[in-house]
Image (tube, rainbow, N blue to C red):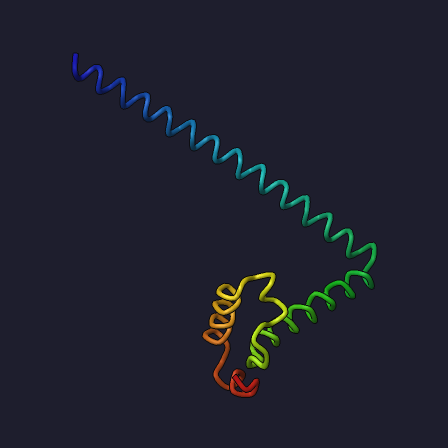
Length: 112
């Protein structure tokens, strides 16, 4: 009797595992299909308006470059412009991360 109960519990557990696996597989397929569709639509947008896509990419690069440069410049005032958005602790941790991952020669040139 105990063996039958154990076998029933194991069968239920295995069915639960199979159901969960199937759900995860289905969800992963849905996400992959959406990503594929988004990639196709982005490619189509670039084909339709290459100049606009170039300007947007350039603007995003300049914006990120300015943000990174601002993070590396030594503090000249007590509060930076992004402190109100990020909070002092988070901004300081981002600055520390940038200092750790960028080469020493680059950070020395920036005066950090």
